[in-house]
Length: 222
Length: 312
Image (cartoon, rainbow over all chains, first blue to last red; front, side, top):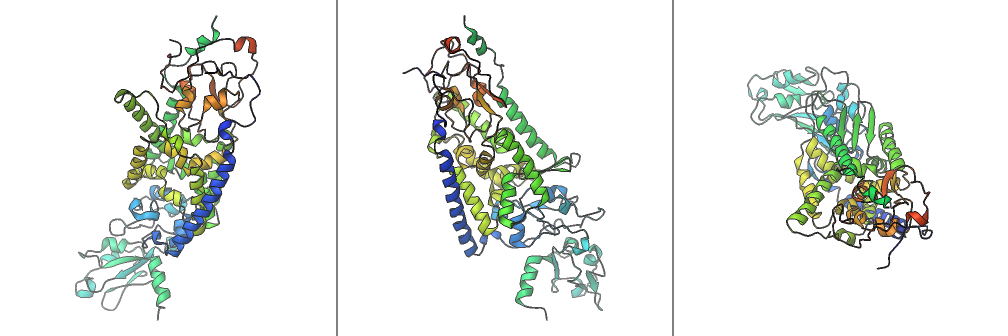
């Protein structure tokens, strides 16, 4: 072995291991962008299958793909929620993984009652939850009553959803037979009614706003 | 007279940088985990976005870039948060990888267990370094793929599926499915050491690009460089940098390789205090007649040595 010695002469300007490295990195990044665009086009053509079925998002959430684009999955909304409502979706939900959602039956959105503002929106660093100050403007979804199993529609006196609703007599009103009717102009979709519904199979459920809008565009309200 | 030999015994008994680095990464992870409890409201979020003391936003630069590419807009919070980390990275290089990254911590410990296992159970002292076969530019290709995908489909893929976020979300938010991916990488690294950091991590690639001119880097002391030639630094380097043959011996002033994550493993193992993580150059007032005249043993070996082998 020839004994190497440091500082015998001036070293070459670029260390041997870095020769051509910047060029290779630039080529790799560029090629990657091209491949990524190709995958993206394929993904769009396949109908954005990874976006999944609509779920209940936190208050102020952008719609569908826009929300998934703006959400950086940091989980700060989950930590900010004072009622422990929000959960991050796990890996089984594909590309939705890490985005916040909640299940109204187990723990609905309490619209930060008793707080000055909606805390998840305050926590969001990217405006994936658009800044809404008034809880009345929240549109998470729309409550839909299944009249075949609802107690009130089947002859039993029941006011559970009306009592649970944060805007009783506005979002849920009674008709002349004292049956609850949802007013879609006021209903925030918070899910408190679903949470409070006493029937074995819940008879008032929240449809995510995305589904509601999609159905509305397909069959315009008469 | 052997003035250099005194250096050999100057090192502390513990591995200074790797201890410090594991402590900082553990502290970061502990703060994130503590934030679950209501009595600790000062450190919210996960690795992709954090809020310190309720005011200071910290945003992963790659998350901010993906946000910009995917939505064609960006918020002030995200800009401020990313700017903090980008400034630190411009000054100090990919220091996140070495000192903060929770996945880096896990993979580092995984690697220590693997090496102990190989040494004690399998009696293999030669370090098997198969990940040199993985091209080091592949993580840049992955970074490009992520950005291209985000541009067309509008989905920040890395924020959803990155093992770093999956690990933190499992520990902080309790979505444990992500641990399958982390476990898979840990198993893979028993065969390809540190393959995630070296060849796959797009976030590391992003930090490497930002921090390639970082001035806080591993610098070479010309007074002691090339005396022992034990090659331990380049055998240990988790990023596969050939420190001795390509940097120390040709007489470079610092390790300028963009992959260097400032982990300090090379400094901890060096028996002759050749390397140091610092902002300024080592003073170059060497007298070639006397300084390089000290002939310490030259060890040309691939063996995984323990400290003191060279002098015994």
